[in-house]
Amino acid sequence: MIIHSCKKENNSNKEPVVNDPTVSAAKTWYQSTYPVSAAPAGKLTTQSVGSSSTAVFNYSKFINPDWQHAASYTREKTGVIELPIDPASAKIGSAFRNLTSGKVLYKQKYSRSSFLLLKDSTQYQAYIMTIIADSAYLKNDLSKLALNTYRKRDADFSGVVVYFTPAGKFVSSYGYKNGQLIPAPSAGKPASGQGIQSVNDPRLKTDEVAACDDWYLDTYENDELVSSVYLYTICNGDGSEAGGSSPPPVPVPCAMPPPSQYADAVHFVTNVAAPPGDGGGAGGGFPPPAPAPQPCTTTTTVITADTTLIACNEITLLNQNTDFQAAMKALKADINTSYESSYSIQNNNGTISYNLNNLGKDGVNSGNIPGLITSNSIGFIHNHDNDPNDLSIFSPGDVRTLYANVKNGTIKNTSTFTFAVVTASGTTYSLVIDDPHKFQSWGDTYFANNGLLFNSLYNNNVNASNTVAQNEAGFLAILNASGSGLTLLKGDDSSFNAWKTVIKDSNNNIIYKDCNL
Image 1 (cartoon, rainbow, N blue to C red):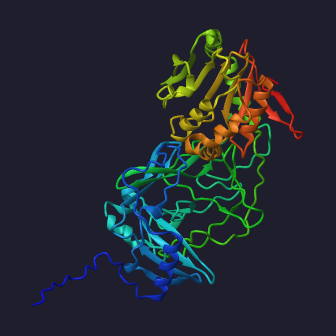
Image 2 (cartoon, rainbow, N blue to C red):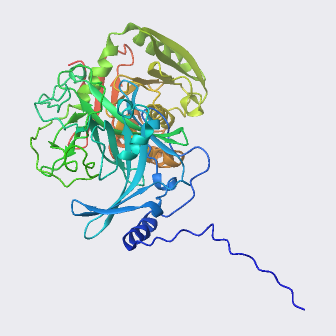
């Protein structure tokens, strides 16, 4: 007698078959380009969550397309496959935030994301399309979000559509008000106070810079903030407050001359073309993620303000500040101790205070710095004591501390933050942040893997056995590597009321530009 049993095949883990050959081909391409993988467990540890982070959120690691509910069609002579997010994926939400005012303009609960695959005659392009609606448009009816897709939008839609690649790179965004695409401003013709800025005076002072808004997209995974990504900056032409009730559009780069959207030091917009068509007027679709380059309707030449002048403007404010001078002199008097000291400069509702701290033997490098720079901090100054191993210029821990506090958003006003050191070698220096976005990008590269690359670069250029001049040249070489967004200034270590920028000329020689001239 033979006894056997049968086990029913379990098909629950099999991926459903896609019958549409167009969708099937797109699926094959997408999954080879963005391999399916389980989302990392728990909170993202690789993301820097802060008000000024530039870390990207890799959507492809957290959400997948729902291939069974794909919509395949043709629009503007391009094959389109529009797909919702697979319900088994993480719950993703996005908010549109004005960093300048701190206001969340569009909340993440009013957002809806989907996948968009576009195919021309040769290749596919994949995007995450996120629609964030205005609460006044929704009127507490979240079902209205579903009325807005790439090929069809609600006739009275108000809000913003944002495009990213699945890997998290920002592509473009467009704002709508009552169904109308908010046009990009034209040079010399500001729209609602927001316009293109033209600067033709290289002697620009920072207090003459027009008011600017920095716009960020906050991303939430299962209702937890996991990423805050810088999108772009728009400035007002009249110097008035740049905030508003609706977001400005992203300027569209022109075909000729090559796009030059921002003068990094002062966030000025240039080379703006007319916005692309949005699918046929009221009720049409949304603009494509990456429209073909268009001839410029107007072109504005921008002369970027001299960063050395900007740095001087910032440090000169302290030259006549007796409290700052007294604090620096006190730090200098303390260099014969066996520990490093610092002052955290705080602004509490207009009251400026200098809070003395003992950083311990290893100073900033010891890790004792956390908590000393807060959201109320407007500066941090410290000393290097007379230990033979201490340096005549900023240490790796000093630079990393500045980077970390810019990246996590603790430093609220990077353009005026003071970061200085006085050393037992008879030197005093200050670092000025000319471009926080460039500085963050530079720091992301050089401080990755626990600062392996930066430490290697630093040790090849700066050490305690070098002369002051050698360390100064070596440190400047580090800052110039790939463009750090920082300017180095050297101060008078007796009165602390005279500063010079430290730069290299065309022959690679170090020269000093007196800020007092």
